Length: 371
Image 1 (cartoon, helix red, strand yellow):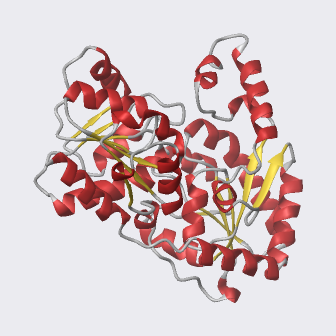
Image 2 (cartoon, helix red, strand yellow):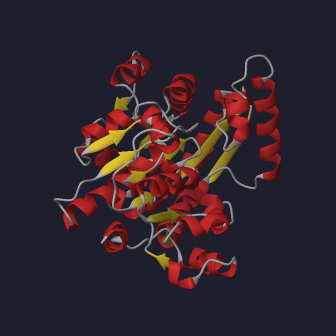
Image 3 (tube, helix red, strand yellow):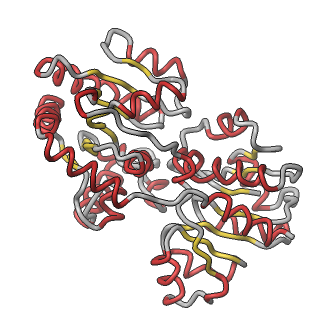
C-alpha cells in the first residue's frame, strides 16, 4: 500500500513508483491510500483510479476509518511517499506489516522507529539522517523519483523559443484565482512583444471544463496531450509559475522560470501543520492564516523549491502584491535579457541532472521488504 497526499506527490513520486512496481512485480496487489491533506485538490482519487496503476484507491474518509477503528488494511508493506508520516506509521501498525518511507527532508529522524527502511533522494540527506540518530542500516539513497516522472526534453534552437508558459496551479480554487491574473500578464507581455506565444499546460488534477472556461476569449494555446506538452516545453523561453513541485520538474528539463507568489490575499496560501486547519474556523480563521503566512515568509529565504534546494536564487522570484502590469514588465525584461536566460538554463541543466532509475531502485527496496 502506497500512502501519499497532494498532486505534486502523486505525479512526481507515486506514479513513477507504481509503474516500477508493476514492471518488477506485475501480479502483486497494489493499493493507494490518500489521507486528508490541505494541499489536495479533491481529484486525487479520480486521477489515481483513471491511471490504471492501482487495484484499489482509498480516499480521505476511507483512510480515516482505517487508521481509527475500521477494518484492518491488508498489505505486505506500507510505503510513505508524501504527506504526514503518521498515517503510514499507523496503517502499518494496523496492517501488522513493515513500513518504508521515501523522504526529502529530515523530519523522519524523530519518527524513524516506525519505519523499517528510510529511503532518500540524496546522499547528503542520508548522511544527515544518520547524524540525527537514524541507524545507518535503515537508510538507503535511491535518487529523485521526479527524474523518472519527467521526460527529457531537447530544447529548440534559441530563435524558436518564443513561448511564455503559464502554470496557474493544480488546485481548482487557486487556478480560478490566478489564471485570470496570469492571462492578463500574458496579454500585457504580448502587447510589448507580439512575437511571444502564450501556452498553458493544465494540471491533470483540474477539471477540463474549468480550464476551457478560464482561457475562453484569450489568445493562448492549451497543451492537453503529452506530445503537445513536449512541443511547448521545447519552445519555452520562460515559464510563469507558482511555487511548487512544478518548479523542480521545469528545472529538470532546463526551463527558466519566474516563480510568482501573489500576496493579494495571504489567507489563501496553503500552509503545513495545525495552523492550516485552524484557519478554516469561521470568523478568526482568515486573519490567523494571513498572520501565519506573513510571519512564515519573513523567515523563508526562498519560496521556490528550486532555489531552496540550491541554496541560492537561480530562478527568479516575485513575492509581492505587484499588479499584473508590474509582473508583465518584469517578464518582458527577462525575455529581453537573453544572457540571463542562458545562464539560468545552464545552471538548471548542470545542477538538476538527476540520474533516472530511482523508481526502480525504490521499487526493489519495497519488494525486498515486503517479502
